[in-house]
Amino acid sequence: MRGASIDSSAFHVEIDSARADDGRAWLLTYETPVEAIERYDIVLRAVDAAGRAGTFTLSVVVDVSVTFDGTSIAAGDLVSPAPLIRVEVVTPLPVEEEEITVTLDRASLDADSLDHPDDFRWILSMRPEISGGEHELVVAVRGQSKTFLFRVDDAFRVAELLNYPNPFDGETGFYYELSRNADAVEAEIFTVAGRRIRRIVGLGGRAGYNGNPDVWDGRDEEGDRVANGVYIYRVTAHLAGEKATALGKAVLRKEPGK
Image (cartoon, rainbow, N blue to C red; front, side, top):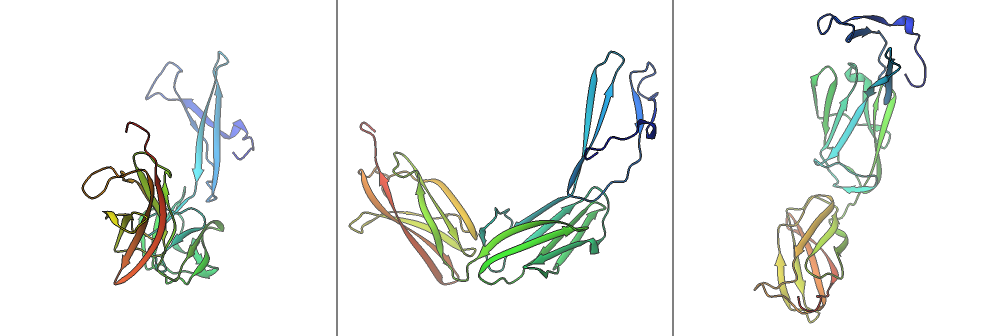
């Protein structure tokens, strides 16, 4: 356990008569305190009379998962200013409510709802109002902590817009960040002269990163393939009467014969 050997005299070993009476099945009993730390392994190793070794690993884990508006985030991801934060804590032994703490930028964050489905699991939900900037959420269980880094944008905006692949021959997708959850998001494609040739609705509208792969097939509203060249696209997000837009350039480069 954590690199330390255990004296074999601490084990109680007997034949498992319920499964076999020929010496092929054994019961091993060992009592050890389980600790509520982030992770460690208990490794059992046995060698039979023929010198064949076998091992069994029991992983003892404190698992902490956090979602923002139903989505897991990577460090530095953008989230909405009023996200629904859901914290789930799973422990290898029962812990009390007061042994779990959640802090936002080092200030205690109280749960709006608290669920305790069984002795080993806690689920906390909260919806704080968060100002713009970079933030740190820390979940601690008996002093062991896990940190989640994220950022908030005060303004409603579409950011980091791009299409991929670009140039493309066939299909391309639109990728961007939203600073808030949008009611609807659409993309419009224009010629360089400003004529709209295609409108695509129903794009991803959650706060943070949104990927919409292969949503434009290089065709216009009538279903005809457009010519090779540069096209301007505009992504517009709608939220309660507000609009946020961003522009990009897509290059269509069809191979001869297609």
